[in-house]
Image (tube, rainbow, N blue to C red):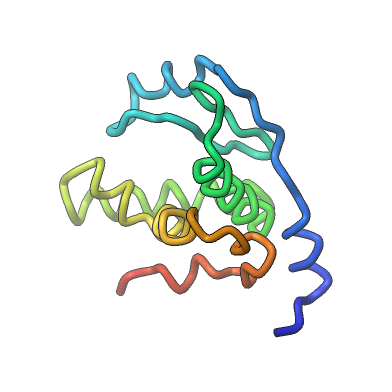
Length: 128
């Protein structure tokens, strides 16, 4: 499989990680889940020292955001969440069924996924 220049460029990007951040703690008070770490733009905020699996998960989100020029990702993420909330009537299930989360959870344990990840791969995780 030959990677495009954009795919190569994105695959080399790493977010800036902030360990021992209070942001996930504060956002957990508003969210339907207990947030351990989150990716926002080129930053990842984690409650403690970030485990490698979580780092990969959040870096997948960072790459998704790069593909959609950040704002596009945030709009789609929130839209998928609202659709899931209307469908499932459960905030945690709406979060888990979001295609961005489904891609990240499915591949967070694959060591070479970030190097080989196809662009727009999250699209394959949309349920019809």
